[in-house]
Image 1 (cartoon, rainbow, N blue to C red):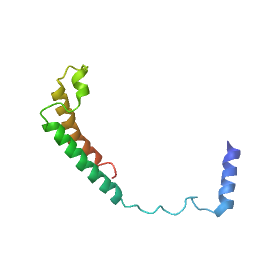
Image 2 (spheres, rainbow, N blue to C red):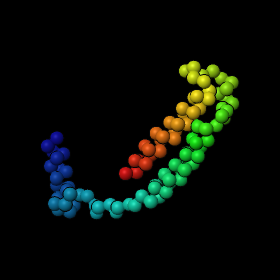
Image 3 (cartoon, rainbow, N blue to C red):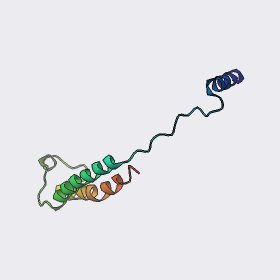
Image 4 (cartoon, rainbow, N blue to C red):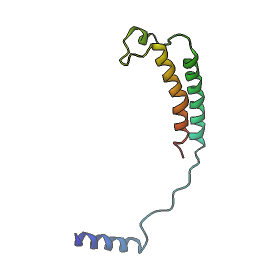
Length: 98
């Protein structure tokens, strides 16, 4: 253990002196692309979830023909899923890039 530490120190001093070994600080990136992406995705998600929330019939026929494991009516399940997608997901996604 002591030999590897002294070899590392010798390599450090021979390669550039007392520097920390780090390069220049990374250039600060702006997040305009991420902000535009989130805004556009939020618009699409809002339109879809608004449609699913206020639709008076089940949109996906698969769920009408197959049993629901939780026993929730199909239209209620659709509305609950749309409200979760409308309220919770955009508020969480706006915090991701920062």
